[in-house]
Image (cartoon, rainbow, N blue to C red; front, side, top):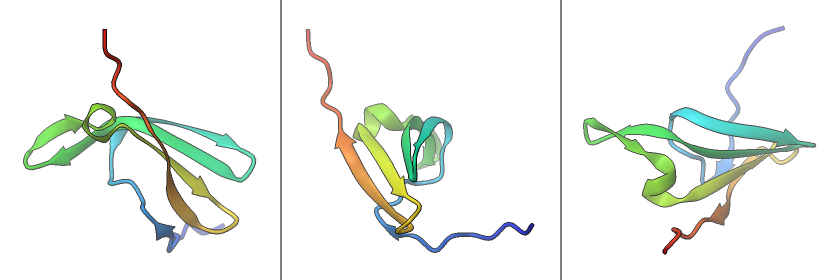
Length: 72
């Protein structure tokens, strides 16, 4: 077996750490984490509130959902 980098299409998320993902069939949902931006760590979920979706069959990323902040 040999690892290789996929050449995906679509709006892929930036490199990040501390994120969560779940695989459902051929779909991979990714949310949260932190990404290094402008020299500091920024929490990604609060920065853009996106849940990314990767579909393996088509090798493509989408923004699946944009979460709205909770207000009291």
